[in-house]
Amino acid sequence: MMKQTTLLLVLLLCIASTGVAARGQKSALMVPQGRLTLDEAWKAALDNYPGIQEARQRIDAARAVLKQAKSAYLPTVTAQGGIKALDVTGQPDWNPYLRVDDSYNEMSLGIRLTWLLFDGFSREANTLAAIHGVELRKERLADTRRLLLKAVATAYYQAQLAVEGMVVAKQNQEFNQILEKDARIKWQVGAAPEAEMLNFSVKALQAESDFQAAERDFKIVCAALAQLMALPEAHLPEDLYPVRITKKGGSPLETFESDYQFALAHRPDLKALDAGVLAQEQLLRAEKGNCYPDIALITGGGYMYEDDKTVKDQEEHETYVGVVASWDLYTGGLRTGKIREVNAELRALTQQRKQLLLAMGAAIRQSRDRAETAFETYERQKLTLELTQRIREHVATAYRAGALPLTRLNQAQTDLVRASGAVALTWIQYRIALVNLAAETGRINLLPDSPPSS
Image 1 (tube, rainbow, N blue to C red):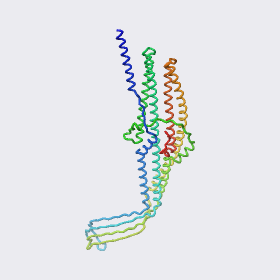
Image 2 (cartoon, rainbow, N blue to C red):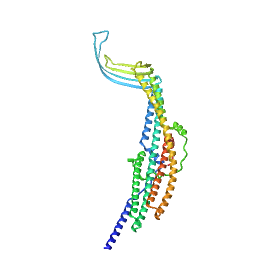
Image 3 (cartoon, one colour):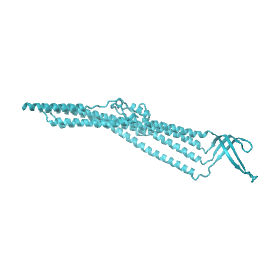
Image 4 (cartoon, one colour):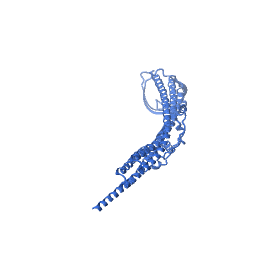
């Protein structure tokens, strides 16, 4: 009986050991390893993102509008022709008792040239408005580019942060698995309670859960990054995963006044608004020009042939040249209504510009404050991590020697995990704040080939 009990205990221990080994193999945590740099992500987005291509097409449309406006300076040549079968009845005034019925064919050809000489300077104003419209579309392309670069960088850094979360969780799991193994040996020989071994098992499982949560965040951010890079089905291949974080020293920021003045000169959305204001002013001028008469030069010629009219065929030839004028004296309020509409749009753009200036100032201040605070916090967290690492090593050594309880080791390990995550988090917050600041000032658009270091 004693022998059977011993065999049963050995069998249970073997099953338990096999189960732990199987769990360890199943829970092998793989940290993504990629080669994608931020420069490459930016280039792919600028080359492929549909929003960029759409903005370029809108520039082409604006250039076509400019060509239409310039056409008003050139003459219009119109050709016309026709053939008609006529059945007419005529009664001459000189003989009220005579009625003539006739059927004949009429063929005509003509060409007419019309050249506008004066229209109250409306065509000049429309041309200038179209020129400003092209500039507006160019600035909107630059603004689309600015926002795209900002979005790509933010997604890229968030993916790096998720990877760092996985790295910290894996290190935490491996540490607890080592202690779990040691505690299991002690438990098997009766030198430690089972609860101590199970504590490390629970900690390892919690670390696996933390890893899976970080892995989920990584996959979500990678889908967003793939969308911005215009990859098929928004899928980011494993070889295009972002590279690991490279932590470098921070550089001093410019003064707020310097950043704000730079934004005034380079923010594309502000420059687009300015171009829109100039275009609207010219449209107002064009509408006022409609209050003046239109004067045009006309010239042309025509030919008409009438077959079997009365007794014989008839032919007519004509050429002409002259000047014509037209002046709408009353339009029922159409012109004044349009002038009021354009004036209101112009005032609305002026207020929109004031609103944008306020938003720019606030955004630049916020980005500067976030960057400065994040970097200072990162420096402190980095020092905290070094000290926490040393404390954990001392506590782990003392625990193995039996000089410290399990709760102290748990606390030291928890502090280390938090410190590691805080270092990665504050560094990423610093990088994102710098990208936001570069986007708010417009500097990000000046660095297509050498963006802020990652």
